Amino acid sequence: MPENFLEKPLPRQNVYVAKGDSPYDNTRNVLSRMDLSFLKNKKVLLKPNIGRIAPKGKGITTDPMVVAAAIDVFREKNADVSVGESPIVGVDTMAAFHSSGIESIAKKRNCKLIDLNMGKFIKIPAPDGIAIREFKVCHQIFEYDFIVSIPVMKMHMHTCVSLSIKNMKGCLWRRSKVDLHMLPPVEGIDERPINIAIADMAGVLRPQLAIIDGTVGMEGLGPSAGTAKSLGVIVAGFDSFAADAVACKLMGTSAEEVPHLRIGAERNYGVIDITRLSITPDRWEDWTSPFSPPPENLSIEFPNIKVHDRNSCSACQSTLLLFLKRYRTKILDYFPQDTIINFAIGKGHNNIPEKTICIGNCTDGIRKNRTFIKGCPPVASEIMCGITGKVSVDFLDGKSETPDD
Ligand code: SF4
Image (cartoon, rainbow, N blue to C red):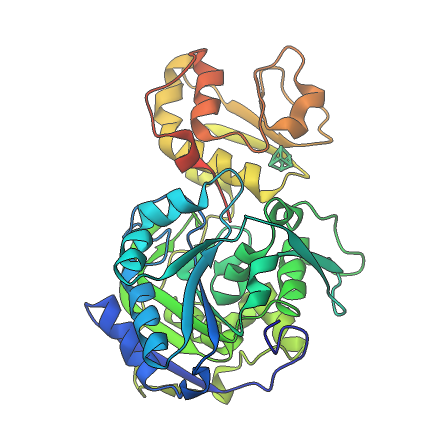
């Protein structure tokens, strides 16, 4: 098991930033300023964000050249390097590696790609956990001495941002990832349970190094339905909370505003107070380029749509968002002009309008006489088929529409 998975590390306060046209050079630049000599003969697992099937450059998956540089640098330190991921439910890991471009760079380097979904899980207790007291973790990661989280710099509609701490959710075993989105409110704490759960996860599943890929990030409706944003920066640090805090600043926000980072820092998992960090180069803040936050109210984004959301998890929220973003104008022909189109997600609804479209298995109880789209979650093309009555629609492949991470 990696050394600091179950103990609180001493915060290391250096964070390194680089900016330029080449993600490969930027990554080498930040890593060249860190002493990695202790990795000689160690087994290193690189954990990029390849949670879904998407081509590079869309702000959805980690740039392959960032991963390529990390492989090269760690090998130069005589480490044994692999790349692993457990994507969101329904996505084939190797297909995701392929579409991201990481399969290609790994093959060229004869570097092992690991489908973390294969094999068993190991239950890890979370002694500090409040929302979750035990996690099911993909067993392969315990074969490694050193875990490197390599996320994409993203806004996230449920967790504010998705950076190196949140990216470790891709080490949770298969469907257990969804558990984090299905938690009841935590008594006495006025915070979304998912944010507390990510902080709980950080107590036991914290990377020993963060390399944050801001080559092309995602603003707005992250993690998958937002807008790609080119920034051309890489941030790295041994203290992943500190690296995330610097990335937050570059994105125009503050780690104190991000609940899972604030809660984790309060538990002493890492440092997010920028004044306590040594960040190089001195003028790194000149590279700040504010990311648009996710819209707080979806009806602002989709004026003729009303979403009835009760106790849903973010998988259904994301699938609906992705659907609306892609196909909203296409469904208008199927409804009377100037009508409000109602969607329901989650369970426990009462008094929803008659013609509400029910999305996901949780709405099974209110499906009678309504359009019901089964799935947990369904994908966008299935919603389109349900509304149009067509057996299939000529849109993107369903797997590439699978939401959330
Ligand atoms: S149906 Fe939707 S809301 Fe219900 S558990 Fe599945 S993904 Fe979550």
